[in-house]
Amino acid sequence: MVEVFKTNVQEVAISTMLIQKLLDRFKADKISFDLEDCDKVLRVEGDNFSPDEIIESVNSFGYNCEILAY
Image (cartoon, rainbow, N blue to C red):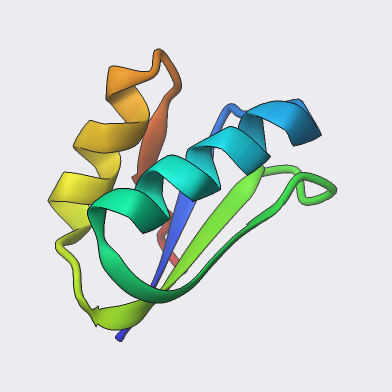
């Protein structure tokens, strides 16, 4: 499963911290940010995560996160 989210994360240091926190909590195969994209995309790949839980986790750190509509 692959899910793509729109965020408001601006800084590499924050994206690195969020990736680590998400990897610690979820059994995702790969988590990455594309901060060059206008939507500051968060991409999560794996079989054992819920998009709602990803959104809640990112929001808990004070950042916006929503599923990116294609």
